[in-house]
Length: 85
Image 1 (tube, rainbow, N blue to C red):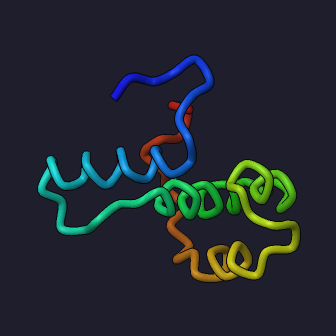
Image 2: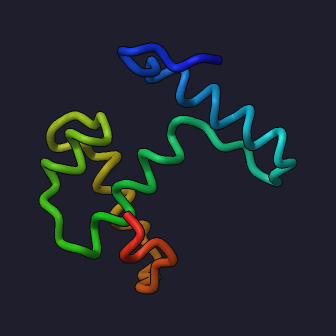
Image 3: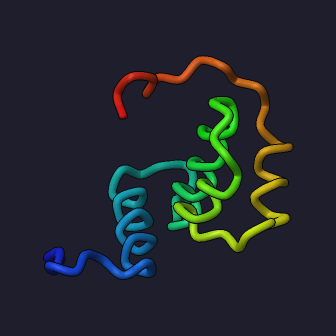
């Protein structure tokens, strides 16, 4: 797959993640949903405004799903990507 000047379509991102997961023989099946949920989970402890995570994650304003992701956060405070991104 070649990335076009305009980037990948949202559906393509999920397809790529799923194929990479299969090649890596993961025990889970990653989808385009995986990074969206990760965005909310990782932005929550930093105190980023909900509106920012909603916009970047493609969630509707006031998304009940996004709120549920925050509520399900297990409180893991250490992050291997701290300072990387």
